[in-house]
Length: 171
Image (cartoon, rainbow, N blue to C red; front, side, top):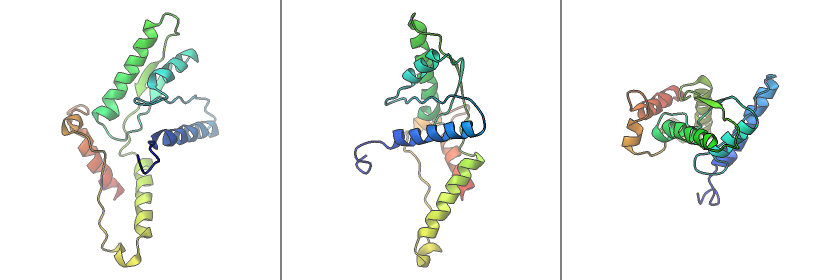
């Protein structure tokens, strides 16, 4: 956080993502609103859900910005959406909120892999020529507790396997 002036870069990254999604949809002639809600900072999921309800949205596709399955990248999003829906149901003055469908993780999606492969190639190309041939790649990810990674999805343990698969695909 010190590197980013005491502020997480995630909100600015999400603003850019929302703008890019809106531009892509508009460019394709698709009239589909894009809403944004965070779990731990404004704008919150509950606020986005209330706005969707107010706007008359009946069904929402939820895109978690984590490419990988984990408790915090999957299950907690389900819990946040469920909590937002319950809050609307408990408020008699609120319109009925939309149903939700969470989109799948994208750790192995061609566009995600290609973007990371291109970034890797650019990083390697930026190295001094005399070290390029001996440089080593170290793949890293969020440090989450093993117990959290193990409860990711059906069968558990998806987080580490997805990270390894993504790294293999990128390389």
